[in-house]
Length: 306
Image 1 (spheres, rainbow, N blue to C red):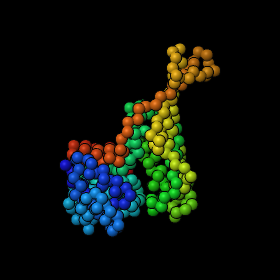
Image 2 (spheres, rainbow, N blue to C red):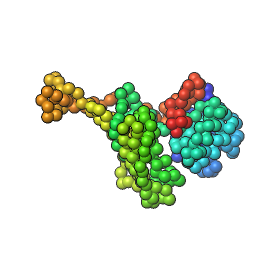
Image 3 (cartoon, rainbow, N blue to C red):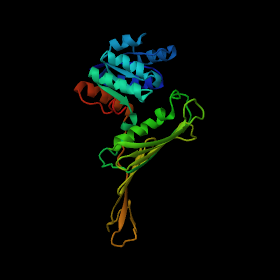
């Protein structure tokens, strides 16, 4: 069993505290949060001890779950890694690339497990395509949200778009050769809407849009590849796959014959909807973090990914 402590008892921290108690591989030894209101609520609701010092909590644990505001990820992660504790860090790993690389170096030096909370990797809609040969050549992603002051300490790129950046880098097995991006501050002091175009060495292009000032919510990614189109709706937990194949004479309610202009090369578009198996994505990623520690295996989302 892994003794774990939680840093941060805000909105997401409370969710982590609740779920960690439900995972048999974890023993939740306590939490720390400097906000008296958050701490009192968490202590009373989850019956978990409150520590009055980050360092005392770290000393009492095998692993530390960092669910604090982004600007403090570096300090919390550094404190835990210097004590050779395993860490789970909510996305983004850090506020800057320099900070992230330093945490990565510390994790390797300490020889501990470090996982980053890119929860969309465990979204049921995305898990539905894990056994499909995905080789996208064009990706279109929209992640739109209504305004919420929580998260505005960083730009919309680190707040929202980072989910899609992680998914794209996970799917496209090629180096990024060019990035074109723009962002606009509208309400907060950080960019609230941004668009990025990522070009890869293998020819793939990803066009990502993220906004936290939209009238409606959307979390959708479209993947285009040779003879296939894949749509993943992270918000609605829905996945659709359209594949292009040689036309057949058999009746199929989900197949549409199309005329390509060449009578000898008739094609059919076949639509399928993979089974969506409901899972709690946050609970799943935390449970896999415990398994990686216990079995001494690589975490599903590594600190290099972060």
